[in-house]
Picture 1 (spheres, rainbow, N blue to C red):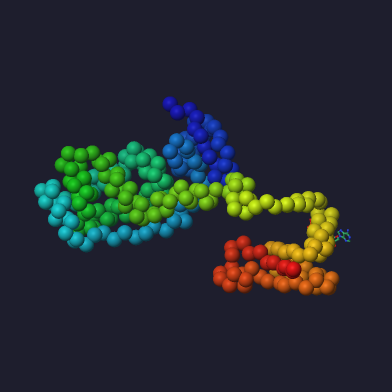
Picture 2 (cartoon, rainbow, N blue to C red):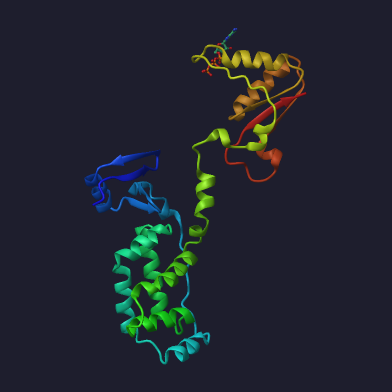
Length: 264
Ligand SMILES: Nc1ncnc2c1ncn2[C@@H]1O[C@H](COP(=O)(O)OP(=O)(O)OP(=O)(O)O)[C@@H](O)[C@H]1O
């Protein structure tokens, strides 16, 4: 029996060993996401899979493919038999685990299944491979699990992000800031880190140094601050230019806008 499981807390990315009873608690409340050999704890309130809007997949109109499928299998498929097969398919624990390994948590699986079922039942003709597999399963020549590739293909059409999960993970991984912006980091730069208690004069000294320099750029998160520094510099006879980054780029404002004042 599995005694310990590796759990990753999404907001606290440290692997932890948890007891089997805790694992069962998470499993019972559907708070687990499986990904290869790791098990992730999912917070219901922050389940990001809710954010993915499924692409609607229309059942096929008769494209002629059905005829090929029927020719290959020797007849059309009884819809009531198809329902039984689909119900059995979705109840299979092995299918749920395999789907999780491909990034489909229980929420996505449920949606994919409903859509797949509707697709199968409402289509005038099934894609040839699906028709053949379905026919084989109904006739006892195949196993219900054989439908998995077609189900997964359907799910990936509904949720295209499943095919770029690795890229998504990479760009949303904020754990190692030191590895961000490799080009900027490759430039040889001198960075002065100024630390001190509140009101101890950090900004004061930084601005004094800025005003004493031959050229410089002040970047601030607030327009008000940039304006204040601009005025202060002008009062000290420094001719500079004030600009707002979103005007500078003249496109949509960057998500984290920085307003700048610079002079040279
Ligand atoms: N050496 C100094 N001479 C004159 N005024 C100073 C001096 N040092 C600090 N001040 C004044 O003290 C106030 C607080 O300083 P400042 O804003 O630089 O602190 P800070 O460390 O940047 O604060 P915070 O951590 O809140 O950003 C400002 O009004 C600043 O002008």
